[in-house]
Image 1: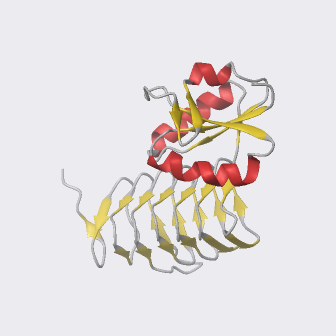
Image 2: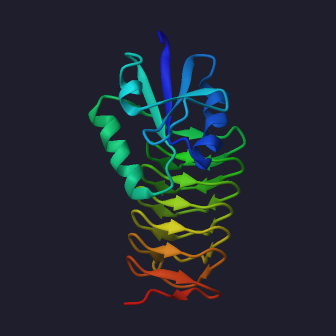
Length: 214
């Protein structure tokens, strides 16, 4: 491969969803491939599947997007890519609404119909799946994951590696008393979060309550 190469790290369901977003932006200038050491196939949806070592050897100018839902794995792979000199890209669908004065870190994936309103701070490796939104004055840490249709209202702070499940609603906080989702916390599908969640906790329900045992 002589031209630029962009690898989608992960040939799973989410990787297949991310590839068309990358193709829409980069297919005219770059060769697109999947990276997956565990996949025994050599091709997926018309794109080659390479091992990591094959990817490293295929071009002098390489970039990658990590399409892995597990945030700890996402962080490890991002660090490995950067150590090996691979540029980490961010990607967003053409219909993403990114309004005003938002600071979004590298490695983000913003899927179709995502909205980021205004004055938000979002760390690196953020994944926002379809129809999710982040409202004004939210602060989101590194490697946070939003499943589809997450509704994150204003003045919410979400710490590193938190996971927000499909259809969850996070109540709006205030500048002096934001709703805080602690580091590594999990908010279950369809939950309504009305108060802060402790680091590492698992909450579920309407209103969301801790279901973590032990």
